[in-house]
Image (tube, rainbow, N blue to C red; front, side):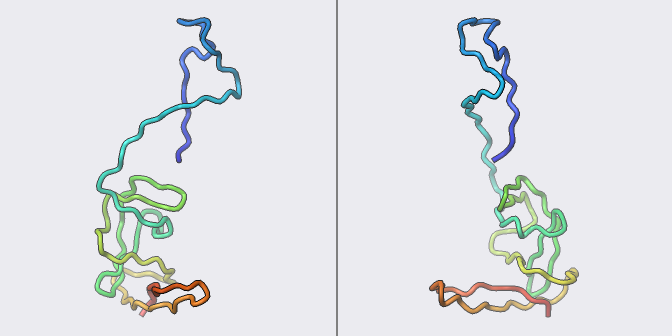
Length: 127
């Protein structure tokens, strides 16, 4: 969702069609807006963004800090034009002092037995 300001020509309907419905202050209208489809973008959770427009990638168990080009941000997602490709592992964990090339270790979390989770989730830790 985005905030949009719409300008209405002749809101009182006085120019061409004086009998048209008039818009008054605080009236509601229905508007159809056609947007464009984003092609070839990468969707990530918004929490993947670090320090502005950067992401952290686990590349061969080392930290690769990358600048990315944002196409769109929503409340919980970001859409990137570049910076990561399908199949790469984005680091979502917090790292105390991230440094380019620092070693990483993937640690498997124990499944939450109370929730009936079948698969363990991976987390990254500084080595």
